[in-house]
Amino acid sequence: MLFIVLFDRFLMAFALAIHIVLASIGMALPVIILIAEYLSIKKNDNDYKILAKRLSIIFIVLFAIGTASGILVAINILVLWPKFMALVSQVAILPFYIETFAFFLEAIFIAIYFYSWDSFKGKYTHLIAGIPIAIGAALSAVLITMINAFMNTPNGFNISNYLKTGIITNVQPWAVFFTPSTWTEIFHVLSSSYTAGSLIFAALFGYMLLRSRDENKSRYYKKALTLFLMVGLIATFFSVISGLQSLKQLVTIQPEKYAAIEGNIQSQSHAPERIGGFPVNGTLKYFIPIPNLQSILATGSANGTVPGLASYNESTWPPLIVHPMFDFMFFMAILLGLILIIWFVLQLLKKNPLSNKLMLKAIIFAGILSVLILEDGWVLAELGRQPWIIYNVMTVSQAANYSPSILPVGFAILAFYVLVIPVTVLAIRKLLKERPLENELVNQ
Image (cartoon, rainbow, N blue to C red; front, top):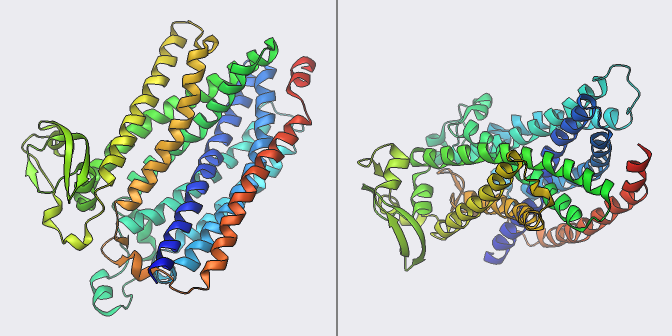
């Protein structure tokens, strides 16, 4: 039984780890494509039009694989966590339902946008036709995030009666759109997804620019790279703000998660911010304290009291490993921010940073960091809610499917991901090779 629950968790984590990256790219690419097309019109610069068209090819392939991945994630939820879905289907199903319309909006306008280049009379008409794609992609993320917010701060039904009797009563289906954590989560998910999605392509184009010996290609890569980095820089700024807001909110909505992240065993005022440290025998050791900083950040005052784990039932404590995970994410975010700031300052000073090989290598590293931060953040958020799948309502073990019959399905899903990712990369390379970049740049 324990093995099957562990398998459920592993399979869900594996599928989500891949899908989150695909979803982030699927959100960022439409925005970048639209900006590139706008710049091509505004500046009368065909390099940007070529960029928009070539990114559209990549986007369509990734949209297809992202759709398949999303379906598998949905199957995982249904099969692996049946009791969870039994509750959600009665209380919080509306975001799932509405998300299908967001998907159709995106799919319909992808077809219109991709097959109508140079078909519209108006200068900006084709560009306008692409806006629903970006809206649909973002809306899908918003609606799915609402389900996660419900898991963190459940509402919309009589929770106390459900815990006593197991019966769902007083259902308010629209309440899921306005849980205490909904809009904070949405803000952070959108900003962090745009950060990762744009910087993944910044890393890719930085690599290609580093290898390029062709003057036309180098010019094209630099324009594309500047666009990716600007989107990434703006998204990173909002990601930092939303991340701090999310952490501060945990003090009231999920105090155990907050305490575990900060390494607080006891509630205290004048709480230090603990830098580094590892859990040893249920306490945090080997950290560097910064006096009063935690209380100031969490409450606005050094006298403010922050929660500690000892105030809560030890059986519901999250694993203390979330503290070093948070530190790891924090330091990676600092490195990422420094790279982007250095690039931006050099760009403002007209130092031509994209001609510097060290800068290009740093940008490639920033793309890798953005993915690590994204994954670390999601794992941290989910581990920090343990043992609950729905906070203070249903544990993961209560929601899990214990039937051995799920194992063949699970291995089939694992095989799908293992096979389809390299096939997708090869398909994109083949499609782009059929229209060589050098030919497009020369013939413009």
